[in-house]
Length: 393
Image 1 (cartoon, rainbow, N blue to C red):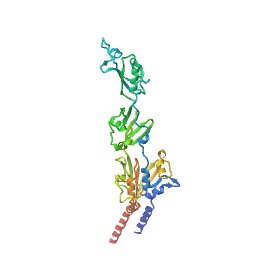
Image 2 (cartoon, rainbow, N blue to C red):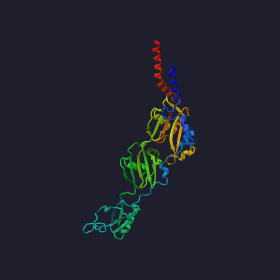
Image 3 (spheres, one colour):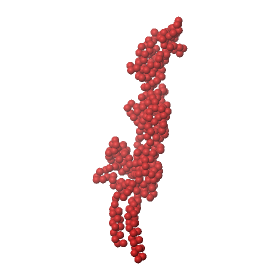
Image 4 (tube, rainbow, N blue to C red):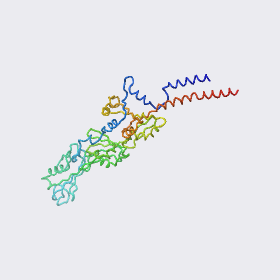
């Protein structure tokens, strides 16, 4: 029996001093200790309180209304190179340039005529920005409105035709249109109306979005500037539904927002938002909540790279070692305090956040005793059996 006690004591001492027990991650104390090692700061540690939550909620998000505030309702559309233009000309009496000849009944120009006037075949505006009109020559149209082109044609035909009247239409425009692509039912170049169209009108004209609204983002590129917002925001906020401008490129992107959960929760996985916005409380609920036998409620951590503006608003010294000059920030929530549940209900989760729930210190101690029992159990059982056999003799 004395011989057996020696290895058991050695096992206990070795396990008690062992720091390599299986674990899902660092304890609360280890997270705090690892923020700064050897005089070097690795991340910014922030305790979540009411001020921190208010600071995060106050950060402006990207929006169309602010980014493109210089653009209001677009001006009346003008004809551009590549547009298709149709011209119809009337004269006050027969026998003119475009009307039927009195004796033959045939048009003097060889172009079909009728009660509605003489229609010149549809033309594409050439590289010189002009179209051809019989007896008027090359008429410049690019950069002009249809009304201005009508007046120019009538002016050029005055004295040649009998009181000419012209109507100019644009059956197909490539310049006064918006390109809609991505996750839409029918990607297309959507022509803009004279009265102006808003972004949702253009998206609807392309058949609408394929994916659910909360999973879709709208990316607008205009004059070298690109901005992206959730489609939920475009639908719910009328200020974001700005006017479309000629040449805009609208791309609908299906981009499910997710966060990852590790540690002492019921579910460790990547979890989709399932909505445009969720809070930390909702994220923990989606992960099945904290495990009663493992979790340390003082150790709810959220890992995120924050831009300089947020770090400055938090009054923290920037690290700028992340992508695009961002700083790694670890937010800690102590859910042993009842007020922290209100913070969690307001704390905004961002796409690709990482949530970690630390194990309670007692959990690590339980692992030690479990391992000790695994090693010493057979030894003790053997001793008991041996003594029983010996006492029987």
